[in-house]
Length: 292
Image (cartoon, rainbow, N blue to C red; front, side, top):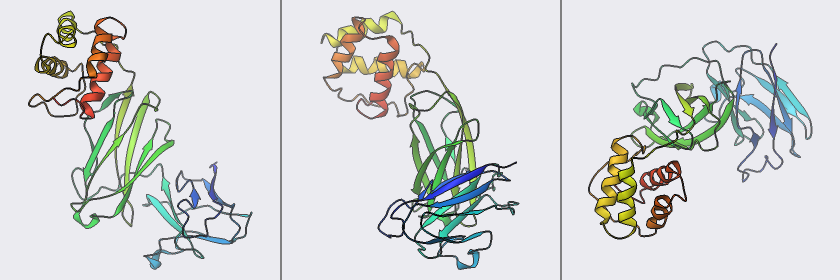
């Protein structure tokens, strides 16, 4: 028995100046689910599968017929074989578009070897996931969606963007508000729709224990006894020993902002923990505030 899913046609959707017209604008579904569009607008709408620029697809998979204001219209999509997603639009207001994604669909084997890549298989909570990829050149400059699913295949986030001139992309997923779990990233693009996916584990941040000599060096630096170069060498050591997850290249020493000494002084006086100090350094390095 499938689920009854709902998409809201938002108030004011008939105006082509409205940014959001459907909620959610990307809906995950599984075989057997039915979908109902609830019209919260004051105008009549008519939902049909397809995209405005490809009229040959319009209405091929489903149509609701007219949905009057404050009324609803439902469909059940039965032809899911070999399909990964369905675009839809309002026939009366064709700038209103949305997408339905089949959660159980397999990957569609994109034409490049690395359509979606992440730099690790596991991340600590709070650590950013850097996502890159390259698709076929024919998809240069077109839009894509990056869908984030949790372990229960629940869609929890959508990142939207468009490929660059080389049909490549890069995105950053912040994990500080995500639960500890396994996650799947699905890159969705093109018509007919292509899907590529990759997964990662999110774990609790481990408690760091920094060697005592590091605290001595940092205390000397915060007291202006050793130079910024000496402090940079400490950070480089922590990065090489994987105590800091540095996502930048280690290179020539750069100027360290003076206000960071306050943080270092708190740590050397046991006012903040090793983990808090490491997290602060990791953030400063990866944001380019400290360059190593």
